[in-house]
Structure formats: structure tokens, C-alpha cells
Length: 51
Image (cartoon, rainbow, N blue to C red; front, side):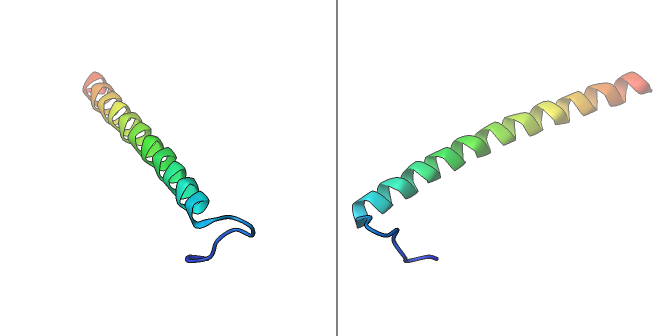
């Protein structure tokens, strides 16, 4: 739950864990955007090939 810390964890440890998780999620989001752009371009290319 928000606002609750893991048993035995300090606030600094929780903050570090959340920052690491945030960095991981931002990296994953960046990869998803790149993958989506590649798929968008591939779809446009193949749509032109079919016509």
C-alpha cells in the first residue's frame, strides 16, 4: 500500500528502491516507444508494398 514501508526497511532504503524501480520503468517505456515506432514504420512499408 502507498505510504507503507517494508518490514525492517528504512525510509532511505525505500526511497532508493523506488528510484531504482522508476529508472527501470522509464527504460522499459523508452524501449516500448522504440518498438512501437519500428512496428509503425514496418506497417507503413508493407502497406505500400501490397498496393
